[in-house]
Length: 341
Image (cartoon, rainbow, N blue to C red; front, top):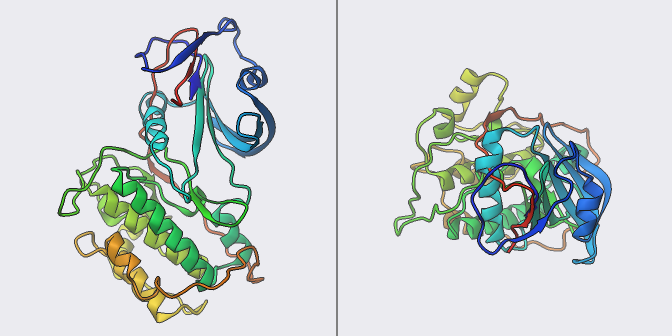
């Protein structure tokens, strides 16, 4: 990441600095800043309360990339000083075919630019909305990819803490890519008994949050990630979320009860059994190694035409309310810093 920011902050080892001659301007020219680093901005593909995501052409990488542009005047201070630096530090150390690849981060006086691999086929949520539900052949392929990617993170002491359909993107070949590590945390490696340090940060989305998170007690974040994976699997095969998050008290009761399955679409017993092994209290929740050996998941997958829809009625999954936010970054005055190294 690079930066050119106003405000004192800790130095970053190995960071190259370039004088920013536009620090007195109320708004810097995004195009000029990015062009300096070899990026040509294209269309907007996503917007939020304090960030915009655009496609850009990268001369350095000779391909399209996605650039998240964070306004430092609109983003919460906690996000700039805690979550954003943590996100950058975490993604720099991850390399897996099913994780969105971090390329560079640029920080200026007014903005932070995060340059990432571009996944051109939208999100898993988009596909569920389009197709109404996802057949078990595609669901199995994508769930395998998710399990492998999450295991890669956990093995390196990284927990995601915000796994949901919106954050699971599709590349040009319809391979899943986990994105948005804004709530992720590193240094959470499991001990020999498979236990990670407890987390007390209650973040993510209500509909994907585990019972222990919703109850507001310290929790094992790796097991919370696994719960979210179970919600994603249910959403894929049924085209809807397993729990109603419109009423907190009702949601809390639901997640502490046995998961229920609707009659349509028809889902195999083996798939339902796997979901039932995941959406349970953390003491008996299936671990990743056990999930990888589950009978439903080890069924051989033949050629998958992932772009073909089910051509059924669209069942839109609601946007989830956020449970909590825990973000941050301290920047140096009048500098452009490349934090990617």
